[in-house]
Image: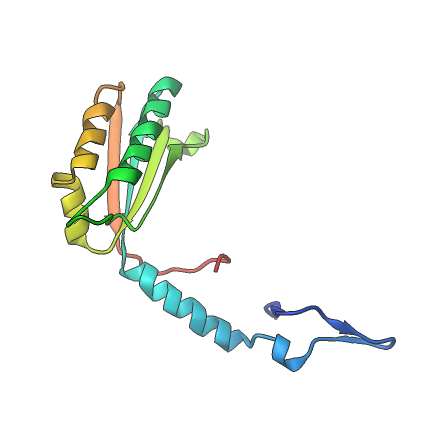
Length: 154
């Protein structure tokens, strides 16, 4: 049986015979679970979208990164940014990547926001227009609402 490590909010106090942490410094594992589960609910409510491109040229990948930077700055719905989170960049070389060389991940508050992104967002429409000039050989897009979340990051 393994135990989860305790997190300390301040350093251990040492004495000549033993080392201990003040009781108030320990975070009870149940308290950690409550924090994690409330954060997970927020993430689970989001729509996560992953788009992969088969874009072999490094120059094309650099131009696509520039377009995602523009999208990050210019995405707007009802006068406010609406993409909750985004990350984009070249895929690491791996035999399992099946020729996909560039990945973009976005998070939206709702399916409606993602549909707006697809069909109406001027910043995304501009990105798609440029992407089609870069020699893209394939695109795969999937989206989902998580049923399981977790991880070590708070």
